[in-house]
Amino acid sequence: MSLGYAERLSHREDLGGRLGDPELHEPPHVVWDKAAALAEHIRGAERVIAFTGAGISTRKGLPLPKLATSFVYAKPSLTHQVLVGLLAAGRLTYVCSQNVDSLHLRSGVPREQLAELHGNCFAERCKKCKVEYVRDFEMDTVGFKPTGRRCTRGGCRGQLVDHILDWEDALPPAELKATQEHASAANLALCLGTSLQIIPAANLPLRTVRAGGRLGIINLQATPKDKRADVVIHAKVDEVMAVVMQQLGVAIPPFVRTDCVLLSHTLTAGAGGAKQQQRQRQEGGAGDGADGGADGGGGAASSAGECGGSSWGFTLTIASLHGPACPLPMVASASVAFEGPAAGVLKGRELSGALPWKLSRTCPAELESVAVRVTLQLVDAADEDKRTQQATYAIARPQGPPAAKPAAATRRAAAAAAPDGSYEFAFVTQRHDYAPRQAELVAQLAAAAEASRAAAPAPAPGAEPAGGGGGAAAAGSAQGEEGGDDGDDDDDEEDDEDEESGSEGSGSGGSGSGSGSGSDAGGDAGDDDSDYLGSDASELAGQARRGGGGRPRKRARPLAA
Image 1 (cartoon, rainbow, N blue to C red):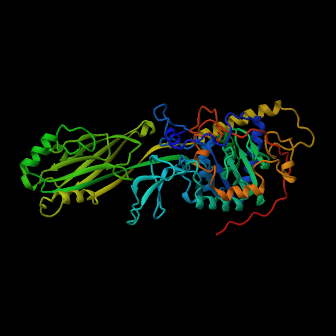
Image 2 (cartoon, one colour; image 1 turned 30 degrees about the vertical axis):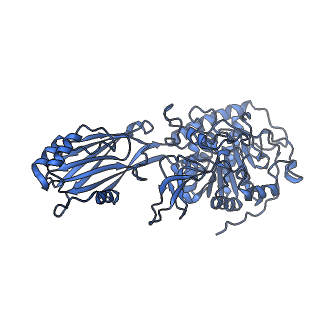
């Protein structure tokens, strides 16, 4: 998990769950048959909603240990990309997640098809106009506290606050309402890697069941809703979803992460003279970073002196798109070099440290333009073949007569004004193709299923097929279906009350990837290839007790326009 996020949550003794419930592993042939049955349910459903928990979030691709405490560098899991593929193929309508790691957005799920019930560590919202900004760095606060930044939308200038729920915070009303509507209209609800124990989020899938739809659950531990499900699979989520996509014939799209830096410059006319030459010589040995970026370099200083007041200058700035002082998490340092005629006149520089990075140079009058080459050195979280990125940038000499030296206040205002030129340099930092991993998982499970099927005893007469029924103990009592739900918190009337409240116990710390509570168990716990960002599993005890059958199906309610 992200230790920074967990540490920012308010202290709470009772996290609403129990640690240490056992993992349940069904025989491979049972998993295969249930995965095939789940694929048929998806194929036959007009509307499908997916509910996701910490079990689908991994830290795959994180270079440990130095980057192990942040969501910033995490790659989506195979299941994240499966959901993107299902959305693109029209097989999935909506995704509701309790995770705060932003991996659904990073994987490519459209924002309008995603509810993040517990917030997003990378998002902040304007208190005034409600616009959302999704950043490439984590927020420093939780609980809707000011981040210190302002809204940039149409002169709004409203205060931005983080969009991460603390324990006592209510679920976001708009996203809760959208999820309720989509769940009630769905023919099938998929619950992937979630313990289904933190209310009201845990009860939302039951809206699909009450509307006549089906419920499928994939989780390594039992959940309180297993007896209400049509298909319950106790296996790793990635393994199951790899088979599901193979059965559906839908490709898993690759993950491509693109980062961006803002290159910009401001011009100064008539910047030469003896005083500037002397200052540049004094600053020639200044350190890296924003504070030491104004040195002129030997060639530029002598040229400025020769050209007197007819010289011109510029300041190159390298910064985040999200603001001058915002971090560039994927960029470790930058080097600036000059090409063409400027190469013999202007001196390059290595830049690192505090942002923004600035480099000022004075040019001789005869230099009409400057060609700049910026080389970015990326952090180890970037793919090895992508850790060096280069961009070229052109700066033209200012037109018109030299401007008079502005007053100090005017110079400060000019520094805050729009630059004379800018360029958004976008570059790919991570790419991962999940097709080979899918083929490997499918082949492994197929081989294991063949062996376990051959070794399995013959099914008893009248036994339910492996693809149907809910829970690991499918032969148990079905009393919750007709006569009552034996006191579980998923009683229909209680569910409605819990879903509408959205307050006590609904905070983001209760579940989601890296919540600190460990409430959502991993669909891939113990998988060396997909270790959890989330904490240890915390699941309600008890085996599922439904033994097949089910209530008469009602027509699913249409989604409100």
